Structures are given as structure tokens and as C-alpha cells.
Image (cartoon, rainbow, N blue to C red; front, side):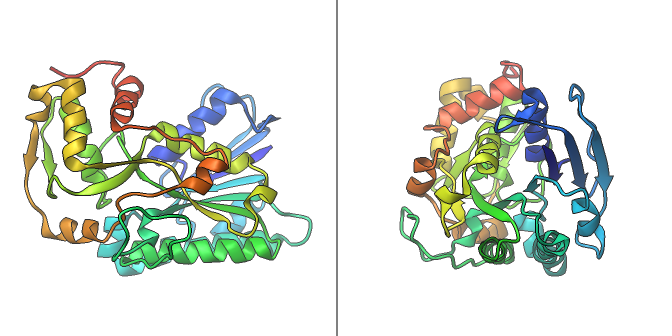
Length: 327
């Protein structure tokens, strides 16, 4: 099996790659080739007995998507994107990468023609929903984004459904919860503080909280995100029918509940490293985001996630901190 990962140098891409290398197979089929791409050079994995191609470029440029799919990958993981805060701050860049790049990728698959129909897994976002919203959003609720990022992802979902209907590829779009706790350094995502108020205090550093404690949001761990991607790549298309975009399961908690989970696991001294510093721009963006979901369809199709925020914190401590918390 030949697998292409777009966005392979990102956090989720790296964790997905590590799992694929560990397993050596996907859905019972051995991995025969990996093509890894990002805007910066991905690192070659160790331990996989199969050819690996590394590539760094702007995949939205003419000819790049065609080059990437020329090897006719069997599975394409499309993780590449400009994140929410950056897409809102840089209108042109957001649309060029998140919309034009996605369309170029889809059309590159189409250009190969009859006889080629890969599974294409597209990472969408909860930002496709916009206020006013019910407290819990079900599978039938409409997408009505209120940010440029959400709009770009919603258009990607529609394109994926139509290209799948036309038999160009076998697509599935997964709306990821906010991935928490994200390891490494903060990125430009407006949601970054959700991870920051856990990650930095556990590492012995101060964290800034830019929104009120009452803000509620939908979360899943990096572990769960990798599980979503693997299941999306292997689930039978017939089970999905014509509705190819799914909201993934997660945990709905307020910022206050996040902090209390951190207190239960790490104690008062760690929580004291959180400093409140309101940011009206972040508050405005987050106010338009959904708070909780009834992801019944995804669960019935076999997608799974943590059941509480304590489990999300413990996964971070185990996977990223070697089980240790900074004093």
C-alpha cells in the first residue's frame, strides 16, 4: 500500500506517521511506500522497511499536487492547512492554502483518470459551525461558519462530497475536535491556549489564559486524533453512504473544568502557573465556536475518543512527559 501524507511535519502528521511505522500496515495491508510532504521538510521515519519519499513545497502552487499524486497513492491523508488564527489574520494566504490547495489536490487526483480512485481522508474542523448554536450540536445541524477558516473547511467538505459522488476518489472528511494537549511549542491557532494552560504548567512554565473560565469547548487527545485518521482510512465507504463528512467524538468541558482536572492530577502549585490576560480578539473568535456535540453517527461507525478530560491530561503526561510532572 502506498500512503501519501500532506502535512507530515505537523504534530498530528508526525504522530500518524509514527503509528504507521510502528504498525507497518494499514487495514491489514502492508505499507509498501510512503510519500511525506509539508511546507517544511518532514523527517524520514526509522524502522519502516519500505521506500520513503520526502518533499517540501507549497502544495497550492501549480504542478505541486500533480507531482505528489503522480505515484498513485492508495490512501491520501490531507492534513495540510493554515490554522484558524492565521487564516483569519491573512485572508489571502488562508484561501490560497486551505481552499485553492485543496481544490488543486482533488483535481490532481481527477486528472489521473479512470481506474484510479484512492481513499482520501480530509481533516475538517468544528469551525464549519457558527453561532447561534444549540448547546449540543447533532448530526443534522447545518454548517454556517463565521470565520474564514471555517468557510474554507466547509467548502472543502462540499467539494469532497461531490468529487466522491462523481467517483473521482473515495473521500471522508473528519471534523476534528480541538486537539488537546498539543505537544511542542504554541502555534498560531486561536485555540492554542486550550493546550497551553495544561502543557506549560505541567512543564514548569507560566501559561496565559486569554478567555473567561466559563468558555466551553470540544476536545480530544492527539492519541484519539490518530485513531480517527486510521479508522477513516480503513472504514468501508458503503457504510458512509452519501454523507461523507463526520463530526468526531470528544469531551465537552469549560476552561474551569480543564483547570480543575489539572488540579486533581498535578496539584495547586501547577495550576498557579496559569495567568489570566484577556484578549478581545481571541474571545471574539472563540465566542463563535460550538461547545458540545452529539457525535452519534461517528460513534456508531466505530470512531472513539476519551470520555473525560482527566484522561486527556494523563495521555499527555504519558506520551510527552515520560510520566513526570515538573515541580
